[in-house]
Amino acid sequence: MAKVLRKAELNSSVTLLEVEAAKIAKKALPGQFIILRIDEEGERIPLTIADYDREKGSITIIFQKVGLTTMLLGDLNAGDEIKDFVGPLGCPTHIEEGVKRICVVGGGVGCAIAYPQAKYLHQAGYEVDVIAGFRSRDIVILEDEFKAACTHFYLTTDDGTYGEKGFVTDKLKGLIEAGNNYDLVIAIGPIPMMKFVCRTTEPFGIHTLVSLNPIMVDGTGMCGGCRVTVGGEMKFACVDGPDFDGHKVDFDELMNRNSLYREHEAAAKENHACRLETLGKQLIQ
Image 1 (cartoon, rainbow, N blue to C red):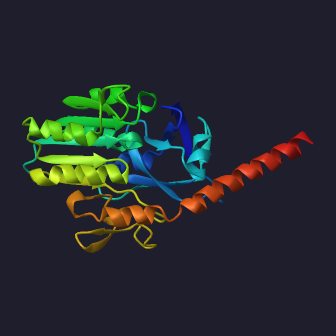
Image 2: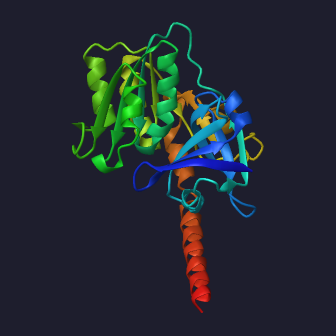
């Protein structure tokens, strides 16, 4: 069991939970993730560790309420408990020797994963620029936290309601062409965004890491649910990643695989809503 210590709604669809998990907090590093199960009947889902406090013994997770499990997770409050909370899993982000200047690019809720990366690297002495992109002003998250965890911070919105209008790739290309010589770019967010960040950096020969968090089940590489093709070879995101060389990832295959369970997810949400409605009617009677 893992107890929820704190809850914060970052916007209408994104929630932060700080969870008591001393053993995980003791070993966690940026880039790693946990797998949780809300109750005995719940599915297992992976969530990247957004932050950790070794002294307090807590792990922070940030998630978007899109499927049944994340919706149920968003219903929890301080004092509630999560049935299973396992980690840290995956390989920590590895920075090669000689890297000095890094640009971390986050998109939407992916910024929750980009933040611990930027924070850790900035504290380690790297020069870190951050580009955070959102559809519009109303879903911006972690702005103040990013500003304190990087050298330069750039915020973009698709509709221009906040920050600079445009996509993260527009800003990244502009910074590179303006003479910002990045040794490494780390892209975290929706798969299409990461794909086009890689297309942006490839002509400039800038090494680019992407954080892949496809469908994971057991987190140990035994189920094969998180297969990805990298450089023509099959990898497992849970044990070989989640960070991979973005210029070698087969993004089209990954997008196709991630769409396989959309109908099942929609059916699970509808079934849950029907059960709640039936239960409500029974209570009224």
